[in-house]
Length: 101
Image (cartoon, rainbow, N blue to C red; front, side, top):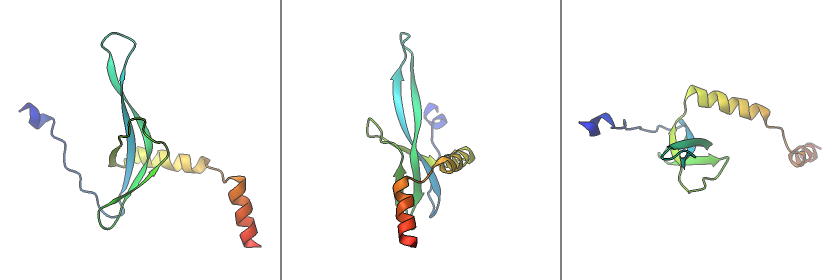
C-alpha cells in the first residue's frame, strides 16, 4: 500500500506541448543529518510530432541529470518575464542593420 501512495501519474507528452527542464541537486545542510534538494530551472523543452523532445538549456547540470515536467502557469510567467528582460547584443543589432541595408 505504501508503494501505491507514492505512485507518480504517467505523463503523456503531446505535439507542441511546452515543458520545463530542471536540474535537481541533493544537498546536505550544515546541521547534522539535515538534507534536502535544490531545484534549478535549467531551461525549456518542446515536444515534436514524433514524441521526441527538443531541449533549450540555459544552464548545464553539474551532475549531468535533468528532470522534465509539464510547464505550469508560473513557469510560463517566469519565461515571459525573462524574455522581456533579454536585450539584443550589439553584434546581433549590427548584423540586422547590415542585412537591412
